[in-house]
Structures are given as C-alpha cells and as structure tokens.
Image (cartoon, rainbow, N blue to C red; front, side):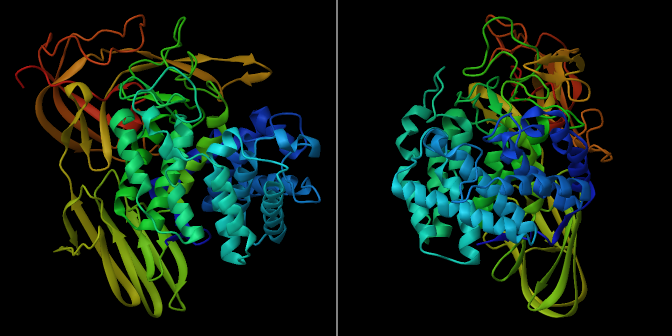
Amino acid sequence: MLTPLYREIRPEGWLRRQLEIQAHGLSGHLHEVWPDVRESAWIGGACEGWERVPYWLDGLIPLAHLLGDESLIRTANRYVHSIIARQQEDGWICPCAKEERAGYDAWAVLLIGKVLALHCAFTDDQAAEDALYLAMKNLHNLLQSGEIRLFDWGKFRWYEGYVPLLHLYSKKPEDWMPDLARMLRDQGAEYENFTGLWKRPMNKWTFETHIVNICMMLKSEALCCSLLGEAYTGKAGRLLAILERYNGTAVGTLTGDECLSGTGNQQGTELCAVVELMYSYSWLYAVTGDRQWADRLEKAAFNALPATFTDDMWAHQYDQMVNQPACIAFPGKSFFRTNNSEAHLFGLEPHYGCCTANFSQGWPKLALGSMLRSCAGVVIAHLLPASMQTDLDGKSVCIRVKSDYPFRHSASITVSAREPAAFELAVRVPAWAKDVRLNGKKAAIRSGHIRLRRTWQGETELTLTMTAAPHMVRRPGDLRAVEYGALVFSLPVETEYRMKEYTQNGVARSFPYCDYELIPQSPWNYGFAGRALCVREHPIGDVPFSSLQPPLTISASMAQVPWDWADGYDSVPAAYPASRTAITPAREILLVPYGCAKLRMTEMPLCRDT
C-alpha cells in the first residue's frame, strides 16, 4: 500500500499559493468568526458538539503543517489538547454526558478518531496517541457490551472508523482492533443493497441516497482490505458505474443536493461530496495502485473543487451546478430536490454548516498525496509542484517536482542523493496523456506508471512531457462538454457580486465572511458553431484558478440558440435548449477552466449543421 509522507513533503509553486489563499481565507479564520467552532462544546463552549470542529480540524491540521504556519499549528494543537483534556476516564471523548451516550450518534467518535490519527501523523504528541487509543478501545467496549449501537450517520459511515484503527494497528497491533472493525461493519449499512434507489432519484431525503455518505463509502472495501487483509474485489468500480450512469456530471462528480439528483446539468452537487470523493479516490489509489483513481481524483480536484469558492476562499457554495449562469435565491419553491433556495449562494454557511467546516480538507489532502511512499521507493502520484526529503535505502534523498500542472503538461523532476541510494521512482502518467517522453525519449509505461529502478547518486534531472488535444465529450441530451487534459472548460458568464451582510440565528455575515448572490451580466444561451478548439496559455497569477485571469483559455466558435429558463424559474436554465438552430451569427468565444468560472455553462449543444 502507498502511504503519505506526512512530515516530509512541502508544496511549492501554484499549489503552495493555493494553500496560502485557503489559510488566509475562511479555513484559517473560522475559529475567530464562526460560533460553531469558536464556542464549540468540544472545547467547553455551548455551540455544536458533534461534527463541525472535527471536520474543520481534519483540514486545518494538514494545511498548517504543510505550510509550516506556526500560528495555525498552535491553533490546531490548542483545539486538539482541549478536546483531549475533556476525555472521560473510560476513554469516551465526545462532548456528551454518560447517560446521553446511547442517543449520541457515534459518527462523531469515528470522525474525531480520524482527526487524532492525522494529528499524530504530523507530530510526536504522545498524549494524542494515548487519547486515540483510549477512545477507540472505549468504542470497542461500548459496542461489545451493547451500551451503544450504530445508528443514522454512524451506521452509514462505519468505515470511517477504519482510518484511526489503521493508524493504531500500524503502531502496535492488538486483537481488539480488527474485532472493532468487524463490529463496525456488522452494524453498518451495506450499500450494495441500495443500488436500486440510485437509478431513479427522488425529491426525498434518505441516508441510502445521501451523496456524502455515498462518496465516503467508495473507499470502504479498500479500507477493509488494508485492515482486515481481505482481497479487493473492485466494489468501488461496480458501484461507481451505476452512480455515474444515473447521477454523473461532466466534472467527474455525482449530483446530490443533498441526495442523489440525476444527470440534469442544473442539479446541485454538495461541496462535502467533492472533498469526500477526493479522499475516497486517494485511498483507492493508495491501496490498488490503479491510476484510474488518481485520474478521477484530479478531475474532481482541478474542476469541481475550485469552482465552488470565491477567489479569496472566504465564501463557498453548498451546492454547485455544472450549468450555472446565475446564483440567485429561488423565489418560492427550491429548485433543488432536498436543499433550500439559497444552497447555491456563495457565503459563510449556505444551507448547512457541514461544508463550512469540511471543505478545508480538499486542497491540503491533495497536496499531501502528491508524492507517496511505496515498498519499493517513492511514487509521484500527481505532477504537482512539491518537494520531499526522506530516507530511502538508509540514505537521505530529496525529490523535487517543478511544474505548472494541470495548466501545463510538463514537469521537471530532480532527484538528489549524496550517497548511493537504490530505490524505485515511479511516476503516474494520466490516462489522457499522449506522446509521453522522458528526457526527450518515448517513455516506457507499465500499468500507468513510468518506473525507474536504479541506484541514485548526486543530482539527476528528469524532464517529463506529455501532450493532449482539446476535445468534446458527449453528455446526456446530446450536449457536449470540452476537456483538455485533466481540465473541463466552460463558457464564462460575466458576473456581478451582490453582497449580503446580515445576522441570522446569532451568526453574523460581515465582509469578508459575508454572503453573495451572483448576477449574470452577459448572455449564456450558447451552442458550439463548430468543432475547432484552440488552446491559449496565459501567465499563472497569484490566484491559480482566477476568475479574472485564467491560466488557460480555449477559443471556440459559438452562437446563441433558443434556450430559456427552466419552467417556473428565472435563474436556472432548462436542461436542454428548445432548438439547436443558431439565432445569432457565430463568433469566437474564449472558454475558461471550469474551476475559474463561478457563473458558467459547461454542457452545450452543437448547433445544427455543424
């Protein structure tokens, strides 16, 4: 299995800049402005004492350590130690009284276990190691005695408990650990029983069709294999085939607002689902070594993730839509199946606060997984700008990747070793890549990777180049979306940001942590008037996925077509145009990366006779 280099990897280039934007935005200030973190019951306050502080720490901890940000590290440590200080004598760690445990959803126990394991991976905090051990042993005892049982969220997220158990088992294996893993699975939901519910989404909230549960679940078999030594049978691929057929999107995610919502291009996808899908794919790649999972991870990370934030990462959406030419509160009935009329606005806490806390894990965990340890050496899983310093073959080795990937399709890889060090350097090659060359020569690719097994000494420079062609892919309703490498491209809609400052339920929205409606200022009803697509490269600025200065554009010939709003709405487009006949002359329009376009059209028709 591939494992992260928690303390040895450092992001560089545009990736570091993106993490800095996150640290300077809502993630790095949530404990100052949001009562559910600032005054949480986890640290002795009176506000929410269940998932929100653990969710936030799950992203803040790797963010702080990857950046080496001492202020954020101190903040994370303060929260962790405050939680540990309140742990009860028998090991129960969540903020509820003993007599309330049976009615307290154990999902929070699993989640705080993940957080403590992550904290321990970055630090030498023995107090946290001891607290994690006691918390999971206590969970084992309570489930074994029948004092508590899994229900609701804990029942549908049982596999999340395997993450802290894997950490503990790797340190000091004990028989109760796999025993607890089996108890969790026995009391947990079996998702293969629910596939019939995924084929015809309903306007009904259920645990079985909840998008975040499903995105988390995809890694469950991989986790079981790692902890229980069971054979991997490809469960994730089987279930994903059904999910994508009936609920897939052009950017590699699934619709769900909050529950599965079909293939309509104006249906929503919850932000929590994006980051949890990424996390599941990272586990699947680590366990199987199959590059498809890393490819899928990149498609979600480079498109859906940045699309759902303002450029400064102070505001986010709960739901994003692939075709999203407006983000205005729906008058009257919500367009979404199971979310309210403001879930697609950008803000502090649109709809529910789970995404406010949980989005923080997205970018840091992607960076953390860019280079991984293997039993043979190191795998460069994603050609992102980063460096790592570690010991291989008993020798100190530094590996640095310089790249502007995914905005450019080349990378410079430097391997430095003062003493001879024998190990394998594997580089994952995306499935879309063509004409892959290493130092100018055609690269040998085995199982989706370039594998260099040799004794390294001194400084070795490797130059990797790949090519890709922009192309159209077919979407439901005979629409088209444009892809180039790992990026999906959209027609950008000029945007007016309408700020909303107010206080609701005692929580203030005040700049910069305010809410925004996004008002369209240009036409959106376009189709492709030709098939030619031309890529143009631009400088990568301080905001990598800038809505104002995108690092790539694609020129396309486009014309307006008869395309109205959905019936009963004036800010949601119909799923398909009324006609494919152009109603304006064709002209050249620049498409931008999906992640750069906050208002956009992504699935569009080919105009008639093109």
